[in-house]
Image 1 (tube, rainbow, N blue to C red):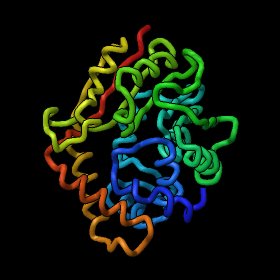
Image 2: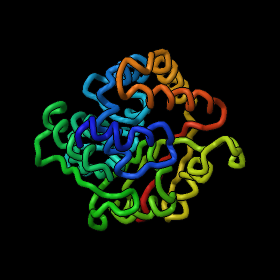
Image 3: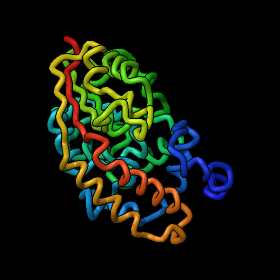
Image 4: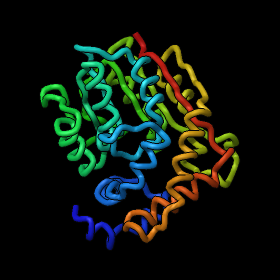
Length: 270
């Protein structure tokens, strides 16, 4: 998708976060990532290495936590669900030796993930597979992966449906790690309906997962806030993509105290 086409056809939707379909994210990945200030801010505040490009605000130590819980290694297969441009999954695959399958509903993101897997992370093609799919319909066979991670994307579909799809593709005893946010007050009208409905641990439990552990991570939230604080200092006219980024940063900062930052882990039924 040409950046100029995206600017004229869909730029207005970047200012409002109510529409999160594949076309929206196609444009996001085609245009917004060109703003180097976003990646600079993430390196300064989240510890992201230069090869990371993507939408997640998970700090690098959070990714370490996820990888350790999932017990990745050679011969194991990781599903990075809602993988975006694939950087987090590629980084874990590079470090652990696991195989990686990434699924995202943005064709633009999937194509970027395929390219960066080899160019930025040096992963051989036979160890990675990126394909277009949905949070609730990955297209993968039953019991085909050893581990699943869903990073900061669980809220974009019905939680129980997402959890059931993860349970379906996981082998018995496989592990899942989810990062995201939940509201402090589910009745707060200032929090989006999408976020008010998000119940990660409840969804995993309803889908049959065991050993569900919900852990609040205020340290991740503090790092994310510092990142947005750096982003909003920029003049939106510096780059065509910055208007939406600065607006999103201001909304996120206004949500201070309204959301909890979480890591939720669980085990698939044996």
